[in-house]
Amino acid sequence: MDTLTLIDNRTGKKYEIPIQNGTIRAIDLRQIRIDEEDFGLMSYDPAFMNTASCRSKITYIDGDRGILRYRGYPIEELAESSTYLETAYLVLYGELPTKSELDQWTHDVTYHTFTHENIKKFMDGFHYDAHPMGMLVSTVAALSTFYPEAKNIFNADSRKLQTHRLIGKMPTLAAFAYRHSRGMPYVYPDNELSYTGNFLNMLFKMTELKYEPNATLERALDILFILHADHEQNCGTNAMRGVGSSHPDPYCAVAAAAAALYGPLHGGANEEVLRMLSVIGSKDKVPEFIKKVKAGEGLLMGFGHRVYKNYDPRAKIIKRVADQVFEVTGKNPLLDIALELERIALEDEYFIKRKLYPNVDFYSGIIYQAMGFPVEMFPVLFAIPRTSGWVAQWEELLLDPEQKIARPRQVYLGEEKRKFVPIEHRKTAK
Image 1 (cartoon, rainbow, N blue to C red):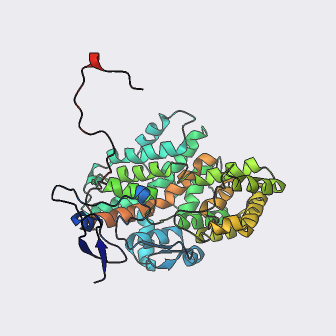
Image 2 (cartoon, one colour):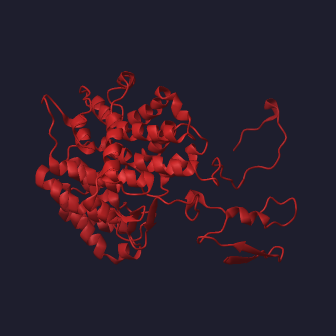
Image 3 (tube, rainbow, N blue to C red):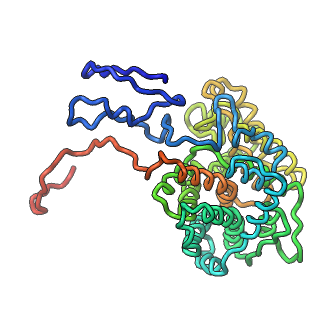
Protein backbone atom coordinates (compact mmCIF):
# COMPACT_ATOMS: atom_id res chain seq x y z
CA MET A 1 0.00 0.00 0.00
CA ASP A 2 1.20 3.52 -0.79
CA THR A 3 1.90 5.76 2.21
CA LEU A 4 2.50 9.39 3.05
CA THR A 5 5.33 10.19 5.45
CA LEU A 6 4.67 13.12 7.77
CA ILE A 7 7.09 14.73 10.22
CA ASP A 8 5.59 16.83 13.01
CA ASN A 9 8.10 19.66 13.43
CA ARG A 10 6.63 20.39 16.86
CA THR A 11 7.78 17.06 18.24
CA GLY A 12 10.10 15.61 15.59
CA LYS A 13 7.94 12.47 15.38
CA LYS A 14 7.48 10.72 12.04
CA TYR A 15 4.18 9.18 10.91
CA GLU A 16 3.27 6.84 8.05
CA ILE A 17 -0.24 7.54 6.73
CA PRO A 18 -1.81 5.00 4.30
CA ILE A 19 -2.94 6.30 0.88
CA GLN A 20 -5.95 4.60 -0.72
CA ASN A 21 -7.78 5.74 -3.87
CA GLY A 22 -5.75 8.94 -3.86
CA THR A 23 -6.88 9.87 -0.35
CA ILE A 24 -5.78 9.69 3.24
CA ARG A 25 -8.26 9.15 6.04
CA ALA A 26 -8.72 12.27 8.12
CA ILE A 27 -9.05 10.11 11.24
CA ASP A 28 -5.44 8.92 10.69
CA LEU A 29 -4.33 12.47 11.50
CA ARG A 30 -5.67 12.10 15.04
CA GLN A 31 -2.58 10.11 16.06
CA ILE A 32 -0.48 13.23 15.46
CA ARG A 33 -0.45 14.98 18.83
CA ILE A 34 1.87 16.85 21.16
CA ASP A 35 0.98 14.89 24.30
CA GLU A 36 -1.65 12.50 25.64
CA GLU A 37 -4.06 15.34 26.48
CA ASP A 38 -3.91 16.73 22.95
CA PHE A 39 -7.06 15.89 20.93
CA GLY A 40 -4.94 15.23 17.85
CA LEU A 41 -4.52 16.90 14.48
CA MET A 42 -7.58 17.72 12.38
CA SER A 43 -7.86 18.93 8.80
CA TYR A 44 -9.60 22.28 8.29
CA ASP A 45 -11.58 22.42 5.06
CA PRO A 46 -14.43 24.95 4.91
CA ALA A 47 -16.94 24.15 2.14
CA PHE A 48 -15.29 20.73 1.52
CA MET A 49 -12.90 22.19 -1.05
CA ASN A 50 -10.60 19.15 -0.86
CA THR A 51 -12.40 16.61 1.30
CA ALA A 52 -14.12 13.43 0.11
CA SER A 53 -17.10 12.66 2.35
CA CYS A 54 -18.00 9.35 0.72
CA ARG A 55 -17.14 6.69 -1.82
CA SER A 56 -19.57 6.59 -4.72
CA LYS A 57 -20.18 4.62 -7.91
CA ILE A 58 -22.82 6.92 -9.39
CA THR A 59 -21.32 9.97 -11.11
CA TYR A 60 -17.81 10.65 -12.38
CA ILE A 61 -16.58 14.17 -13.09
CA ASP A 62 -13.20 15.25 -14.43
CA GLY A 63 -13.45 18.99 -14.19
CA ASP A 64 -10.13 19.71 -15.88
CA ARG A 65 -11.10 17.76 -19.00
CA GLY A 66 -14.81 18.64 -18.97
CA ILE A 67 -16.02 15.05 -18.49
CA LEU A 68 -19.33 13.99 -16.91
CA ARG A 69 -20.46 10.35 -16.80
CA TYR A 70 -23.35 8.56 -15.10
CA ARG A 71 -22.34 5.03 -14.10
CA GLY A 72 -19.59 5.20 -16.72
CA TYR A 73 -21.77 6.43 -19.61
CA PRO A 74 -20.75 9.81 -21.13
CA ILE A 75 -23.40 12.48 -20.68
CA GLU A 76 -23.18 13.27 -24.41
CA GLU A 77 -24.29 9.74 -25.35
CA LEU A 78 -27.12 9.70 -22.83
CA ALA A 79 -28.41 13.08 -24.00
CA GLU A 80 -28.29 11.87 -27.59
CA SER A 81 -29.83 8.43 -27.23
CA SER A 82 -31.54 8.04 -23.87
CA THR A 83 -34.67 9.34 -22.15
CA TYR A 84 -34.91 10.81 -18.68
CA LEU A 85 -36.67 7.80 -17.17
CA GLU A 86 -34.13 5.42 -18.73
CA THR A 87 -31.29 7.59 -17.38
CA ALA A 88 -32.96 7.76 -13.96
CA TYR A 89 -33.06 3.94 -13.91
CA LEU A 90 -29.36 3.87 -14.78
CA VAL A 91 -28.47 6.36 -12.06
CA LEU A 92 -30.49 4.46 -9.46
CA TYR A 93 -29.67 0.86 -10.32
CA GLY A 94 -26.28 1.04 -12.01
CA GLU A 95 -27.15 -0.45 -15.41
CA LEU A 96 -29.19 0.58 -18.43
CA PRO A 97 -32.53 -1.28 -18.36
CA THR A 98 -33.64 -3.92 -20.81
CA LYS A 99 -36.86 -3.28 -22.75
CA SER A 100 -38.97 -5.18 -20.21
CA GLU A 101 -37.22 -3.53 -17.26
CA LEU A 102 -37.78 -0.07 -18.74
CA ASP A 103 -41.44 -0.83 -19.42
CA GLN A 104 -41.97 -1.99 -15.83
CA TRP A 105 -40.02 0.99 -14.43
CA THR A 106 -42.02 3.44 -16.55
CA HIS A 107 -45.26 1.80 -15.39
CA ASP A 108 -44.23 1.92 -11.73
CA VAL A 109 -43.28 5.61 -11.87
CA THR A 110 -46.34 6.56 -13.92
CA TYR A 111 -48.63 4.70 -11.50
CA HIS A 112 -47.53 7.08 -8.73
CA THR A 113 -47.98 10.43 -10.51
CA PHE A 114 -51.24 11.19 -8.70
CA THR A 115 -51.16 12.72 -5.22
CA HIS A 116 -53.55 12.51 -2.30
CA GLU A 117 -56.35 15.07 -2.66
CA ASN A 118 -55.37 16.62 0.67
CA ILE A 119 -52.09 17.70 -0.91
CA LYS A 120 -54.13 20.11 -3.03
CA LYS A 121 -55.74 21.48 0.13
CA PHE A 122 -52.29 21.85 1.68
CA MET A 123 -51.06 23.76 -1.36
CA ASP A 124 -54.16 25.96 -1.36
CA GLY A 125 -53.02 27.27 2.01
CA PHE A 126 -50.07 29.10 0.46
CA HIS A 127 -50.38 32.80 -0.31
CA TYR A 128 -51.14 33.60 -3.94
CA ASP A 129 -47.63 34.95 -4.54
CA ALA A 130 -45.73 32.19 -2.71
CA HIS A 131 -42.56 31.12 -4.49
CA PRO A 132 -43.08 27.80 -6.35
CA MET A 133 -39.86 26.38 -4.89
CA GLY A 134 -40.99 27.16 -1.35
CA MET A 135 -44.25 25.34 -2.08
CA LEU A 136 -42.38 22.36 -3.57
CA VAL A 137 -40.03 22.02 -0.59
CA SER A 138 -42.96 22.15 1.82
CA THR A 139 -45.19 19.69 -0.03
CA VAL A 140 -42.39 17.16 -0.53
CA ALA A 141 -41.79 17.25 3.23
CA ALA A 142 -45.55 16.91 3.78
CA LEU A 143 -45.54 13.62 1.84
CA SER A 144 -43.73 12.17 4.85
CA THR A 145 -46.98 12.39 6.81
CA PHE A 146 -48.96 10.60 4.09
CA TYR A 147 -46.61 7.63 3.90
CA PRO A 148 -45.48 6.77 7.46
CA GLU A 149 -44.22 3.37 6.26
CA ALA A 150 -41.47 5.27 4.43
CA LYS A 151 -39.59 5.32 7.73
CA ASN A 152 -38.69 1.67 7.10
CA ILE A 153 -35.60 2.83 5.25
CA PHE A 154 -33.70 -0.44 5.62
CA ASN A 155 -36.46 -2.39 3.93
CA ALA A 156 -35.52 -2.68 0.24
CA ASP A 157 -39.13 -3.00 -0.95
CA SER A 158 -40.13 0.12 0.98
CA ARG A 159 -37.21 2.09 -0.47
CA LYS A 160 -38.22 1.00 -3.96
CA LEU A 161 -41.82 2.09 -3.41
CA GLN A 162 -40.77 5.51 -2.10
CA THR A 163 -38.45 5.87 -5.11
CA HIS A 164 -41.37 5.31 -7.47
CA ARG A 165 -43.50 7.75 -5.50
CA LEU A 166 -40.90 10.51 -5.37
CA ILE A 167 -39.95 10.39 -9.04
CA GLY A 168 -43.60 10.04 -10.05
CA LYS A 169 -45.00 12.80 -7.86
CA MET A 170 -42.31 15.47 -8.20
CA PRO A 171 -43.57 16.75 -11.59
CA THR A 172 -47.13 16.78 -10.22
CA LEU A 173 -46.18 18.79 -7.15
CA ALA A 174 -44.08 21.12 -9.29
CA ALA A 175 -46.94 21.69 -11.74
CA PHE A 176 -49.42 22.26 -8.91
CA ALA A 177 -47.07 24.87 -7.44
CA TYR A 178 -46.87 26.62 -10.81
CA ARG A 179 -50.65 26.59 -11.34
CA HIS A 180 -51.24 27.88 -7.81
CA SER A 181 -48.79 30.73 -8.37
CA ARG A 182 -50.73 31.65 -11.49
CA GLY A 183 -54.16 31.35 -9.88
CA MET A 184 -55.08 28.56 -12.29
CA PRO A 185 -56.93 25.30 -11.55
CA TYR A 186 -54.79 22.22 -11.08
CA VAL A 187 -54.45 19.76 -13.94
CA TYR A 188 -54.32 16.06 -13.14
CA PRO A 189 -51.68 13.78 -14.68
CA ASP A 190 -52.30 12.24 -18.10
CA ASN A 191 -50.50 8.93 -17.87
CA GLU A 192 -50.79 8.27 -21.58
CA LEU A 193 -48.11 10.93 -22.11
CA SER A 194 -44.37 10.67 -21.55
CA TYR A 195 -42.77 11.81 -18.32
CA THR A 196 -41.94 15.28 -19.68
CA GLY A 197 -45.02 15.41 -21.91
CA ASN A 198 -47.23 14.81 -18.89
CA PHE A 199 -45.39 17.53 -16.99
CA LEU A 200 -46.01 20.02 -19.80
CA ASN A 201 -49.65 18.93 -19.79
CA MET A 202 -50.03 19.65 -16.05
CA LEU A 203 -48.35 23.01 -16.50
CA PHE A 204 -49.95 24.44 -19.61
CA LYS A 205 -53.23 22.64 -20.37
CA MET A 206 -56.14 25.04 -20.69
CA THR A 207 -59.55 24.12 -22.10
CA GLU A 208 -58.55 21.49 -24.67
CA LEU A 209 -59.86 17.98 -24.02
CA LYS A 210 -56.47 16.40 -24.69
CA TYR A 211 -53.19 18.26 -24.36
CA GLU A 212 -50.68 17.42 -27.08
CA PRO A 213 -47.16 18.55 -26.16
CA ASN A 214 -44.91 19.91 -28.88
CA ALA A 215 -42.52 17.06 -29.69
CA THR A 216 -39.47 19.34 -29.96
CA LEU A 217 -40.11 21.01 -26.60
CA GLU A 218 -40.94 17.67 -25.01
CA ARG A 219 -37.61 16.21 -26.14
CA ALA A 220 -35.69 19.36 -25.19
CA LEU A 221 -37.09 19.18 -21.65
CA ASP A 222 -36.22 15.47 -21.51
CA ILE A 223 -32.61 16.27 -22.45
CA LEU A 224 -32.44 19.03 -19.85
CA PHE A 225 -33.74 16.55 -17.26
CA ILE A 226 -31.04 14.04 -18.27
CA LEU A 227 -28.34 16.68 -17.84
CA HIS A 228 -29.58 17.48 -14.32
CA ALA A 229 -30.15 13.92 -13.06
CA ASP A 230 -27.06 13.89 -10.83
CA HIS A 231 -23.87 15.84 -10.37
CA GLU A 232 -21.73 14.20 -7.73
CA GLN A 233 -21.41 15.74 -4.24
CA ASN A 234 -22.86 19.20 -4.81
CA CYS A 235 -24.61 21.28 -2.15
CA GLY A 236 -28.03 19.65 -2.58
CA THR A 237 -26.64 16.12 -2.68
CA ASN A 238 -24.49 16.84 0.35
CA ALA A 239 -27.66 18.01 2.14
CA MET A 240 -29.43 14.80 1.08
CA ARG A 241 -26.61 12.69 2.45
CA GLY A 242 -26.17 14.82 5.58
CA VAL A 243 -29.84 14.74 6.55
CA GLY A 244 -30.20 11.16 5.34
CA SER A 245 -27.39 10.08 7.65
CA SER A 246 -29.69 10.63 10.64
CA HIS A 247 -32.12 8.10 9.05
CA PRO A 248 -35.32 10.08 8.45
CA ASP A 249 -37.68 8.99 5.68
CA PRO A 250 -36.62 9.96 2.12
CA TYR A 251 -39.30 12.67 1.77
CA CYS A 252 -37.75 14.72 4.56
CA ALA A 253 -34.27 14.16 3.14
CA VAL A 254 -35.35 15.16 -0.39
CA ALA A 255 -37.05 18.25 1.04
CA ALA A 256 -33.73 19.20 2.66
CA ALA A 257 -31.89 18.69 -0.63
CA ALA A 258 -34.49 20.78 -2.46
CA ALA A 259 -34.12 23.50 0.17
CA ALA A 260 -30.40 23.60 -0.57
CA LEU A 261 -31.24 23.85 -4.26
CA TYR A 262 -33.49 26.84 -3.49
CA GLY A 263 -30.44 29.04 -2.93
CA PRO A 264 -29.29 31.44 -5.67
CA LEU A 265 -25.78 29.97 -5.59
CA HIS A 266 -27.14 26.53 -6.49
CA GLY A 267 -30.51 26.04 -8.22
CA GLY A 268 -31.10 29.73 -8.77
CA ALA A 269 -27.93 30.39 -10.74
CA ASN A 270 -29.62 30.39 -14.16
CA GLU A 271 -32.04 33.04 -12.91
CA GLU A 272 -29.04 35.21 -12.07
CA VAL A 273 -27.77 34.73 -15.64
CA LEU A 274 -31.04 36.10 -17.03
CA ARG A 275 -30.89 39.07 -14.69
CA MET A 276 -27.33 39.78 -15.85
CA LEU A 277 -28.26 39.56 -19.55
CA SER A 278 -31.24 41.84 -18.95
CA VAL A 279 -29.03 44.38 -17.20
CA ILE A 280 -26.57 44.34 -20.12
CA GLY A 281 -29.55 45.09 -22.36
CA SER A 282 -28.06 44.76 -25.83
CA LYS A 283 -25.26 43.09 -27.76
CA ASP A 284 -23.29 46.31 -28.28
CA LYS A 285 -23.04 46.86 -24.50
CA VAL A 286 -21.29 43.54 -23.85
CA PRO A 287 -17.70 44.92 -24.17
CA GLU A 288 -18.49 47.60 -21.60
CA PHE A 289 -19.90 44.98 -19.22
CA ILE A 290 -16.83 42.75 -19.68
CA LYS A 291 -14.64 45.72 -18.85
CA LYS A 292 -16.55 46.30 -15.60
CA VAL A 293 -16.26 42.62 -14.64
CA LYS A 294 -12.49 42.72 -15.13
CA ALA A 295 -12.33 45.86 -13.01
CA GLY A 296 -14.15 44.08 -10.19
CA GLU A 297 -17.32 46.14 -10.66
CA GLY A 298 -19.61 43.26 -11.62
CA LEU A 299 -19.99 39.48 -11.73
CA LEU A 300 -20.01 37.28 -14.81
CA MET A 301 -22.84 34.86 -14.00
CA GLY A 302 -23.02 31.46 -15.68
CA PHE A 303 -19.24 31.23 -16.09
CA GLY A 304 -16.95 29.12 -13.96
CA HIS A 305 -17.77 26.19 -11.73
CA ARG A 306 -16.47 24.73 -8.48
CA VAL A 307 -15.63 21.49 -10.27
CA TYR A 308 -15.24 22.28 -13.98
CA LYS A 309 -12.08 24.09 -15.07
CA ASN A 310 -13.01 23.54 -18.69
CA TYR A 311 -16.16 23.98 -20.76
CA ASP A 312 -19.03 22.35 -18.84
CA PRO A 313 -20.06 19.40 -21.11
CA ARG A 314 -23.72 20.03 -20.22
CA ALA A 315 -23.46 23.60 -21.51
CA LYS A 316 -22.32 22.37 -24.94
CA ILE A 317 -25.36 20.08 -25.18
CA ILE A 318 -27.78 22.77 -24.01
CA LYS A 319 -26.41 25.21 -26.55
CA ARG A 320 -27.36 22.77 -29.34
CA VAL A 321 -30.79 22.15 -27.79
CA ALA A 322 -31.39 25.90 -27.70
CA ASP A 323 -31.35 26.12 -31.50
CA GLN A 324 -34.06 23.45 -31.74
CA VAL A 325 -36.22 25.13 -29.10
CA PHE A 326 -35.96 28.57 -30.72
CA GLU A 327 -37.18 27.14 -34.04
CA VAL A 328 -40.47 26.47 -32.22
CA THR A 329 -40.70 29.38 -29.80
CA GLY A 330 -38.84 32.06 -31.70
CA LYS A 331 -35.45 33.27 -30.60
CA ASN A 332 -35.12 34.61 -27.09
CA PRO A 333 -33.87 38.22 -27.51
CA LEU A 334 -31.32 37.57 -24.77
CA LEU A 335 -29.59 34.91 -26.89
CA ASP A 336 -27.60 37.37 -29.00
CA ILE A 337 -26.29 39.01 -25.83
CA ALA A 338 -25.35 35.61 -24.41
CA LEU A 339 -23.55 34.50 -27.58
CA GLU A 340 -21.58 37.74 -27.76
CA LEU A 341 -20.73 37.52 -24.08
CA GLU A 342 -19.50 33.97 -24.52
CA ARG A 343 -17.49 34.85 -27.65
CA ILE A 344 -15.64 37.74 -26.02
CA ALA A 345 -15.04 35.95 -22.73
CA LEU A 346 -13.61 32.84 -24.42
CA GLU A 347 -11.15 35.00 -26.36
CA ASP A 348 -10.10 37.16 -23.40
CA GLU A 349 -6.89 36.19 -21.60
CA TYR A 350 -8.40 37.40 -18.29
CA PHE A 351 -11.08 34.68 -18.36
CA ILE A 352 -8.93 32.03 -20.05
CA LYS A 353 -6.26 32.37 -17.36
CA ARG A 354 -8.90 31.92 -14.64
CA LYS A 355 -10.46 28.96 -16.50
CA LEU A 356 -13.87 30.62 -16.60
CA TYR A 357 -15.99 28.77 -19.14
CA PRO A 358 -19.78 28.68 -19.58
CA ASN A 359 -21.54 26.29 -17.22
CA VAL A 360 -24.92 24.56 -17.42
CA ASP A 361 -26.74 27.62 -16.07
CA PHE A 362 -25.58 29.96 -18.82
CA TYR A 363 -28.00 28.71 -21.48
CA SER A 364 -30.61 26.72 -19.53
CA GLY A 365 -32.41 29.80 -18.25
CA ILE A 366 -32.70 31.24 -21.76
CA ILE A 367 -34.31 28.00 -22.96
CA TYR A 368 -36.68 27.77 -20.00
CA GLN A 369 -37.77 31.35 -20.51
CA ALA A 370 -38.39 30.75 -24.22
CA MET A 371 -40.54 27.72 -23.32
CA GLY A 372 -42.75 29.93 -21.16
CA PHE A 373 -41.41 29.21 -17.68
CA PRO A 374 -41.17 32.16 -15.28
CA VAL A 375 -37.81 32.53 -13.53
CA GLU A 376 -39.37 31.44 -10.23
CA MET A 377 -39.83 27.98 -11.73
CA PHE A 378 -36.17 27.49 -12.65
CA PRO A 379 -35.06 25.82 -9.39
CA VAL A 380 -38.23 23.70 -9.47
CA LEU A 381 -37.28 22.47 -12.94
CA PHE A 382 -33.89 21.56 -11.49
CA ALA A 383 -35.37 19.66 -8.54
CA ILE A 384 -37.57 17.35 -10.62
CA PRO A 385 -34.79 15.48 -12.47
CA ARG A 386 -32.29 15.76 -9.61
CA THR A 387 -34.64 13.67 -7.45
CA SER A 388 -33.37 10.48 -9.10
CA GLY A 389 -29.80 11.43 -8.24
CA TRP A 390 -30.70 12.37 -4.69
CA VAL A 391 -32.46 9.06 -4.08
CA ALA A 392 -29.57 7.11 -5.63
CA GLN A 393 -27.09 8.92 -3.39
CA TRP A 394 -29.36 8.35 -0.36
CA GLU A 395 -29.57 4.61 -0.97
CA GLU A 396 -25.83 4.39 -1.53
CA LEU A 397 -25.33 6.16 1.80
CA LEU A 398 -27.66 3.78 3.66
CA LEU A 399 -25.95 0.68 2.27
CA ASP A 400 -22.40 1.92 2.95
CA PRO A 401 -21.21 0.33 6.23
CA GLU A 402 -18.64 3.09 6.71
CA GLN A 403 -21.22 5.88 6.81
CA LYS A 404 -22.40 7.22 10.16
CA ILE A 405 -24.46 10.22 11.16
CA ALA A 406 -22.79 13.33 9.72
CA ARG A 407 -21.07 15.29 12.46
CA PRO A 408 -18.25 17.61 11.34
CA ARG A 409 -15.69 18.91 13.80
CA GLN A 410 -14.93 22.58 14.35
CA VAL A 411 -11.97 24.77 15.24
CA TYR A 412 -13.07 26.61 18.37
CA LEU A 413 -11.81 30.20 18.54
CA GLY A 414 -14.10 31.52 21.28
CA GLU A 415 -13.47 32.52 24.89
CA GLU A 416 -11.81 30.26 27.43
CA LYS A 417 -13.66 29.35 30.62
CA ARG A 418 -15.25 32.40 32.24
CA LYS A 419 -17.08 33.00 35.49
CA PHE A 420 -20.77 33.95 35.45
CA VAL A 421 -21.33 37.65 36.21
CA PRO A 422 -24.60 38.73 37.92
CA ILE A 423 -26.56 41.19 35.78
CA GLU A 424 -26.08 44.11 38.18
CA HIS A 425 -22.28 43.82 37.80
CA ARG A 426 -22.13 43.54 34.00
CA LYS A 427 -20.66 46.28 31.88
CA THR A 428 -21.93 47.28 28.44
CA ALA A 429 -19.95 45.53 25.73
CA LYS A 430 -18.12 47.97 23.48
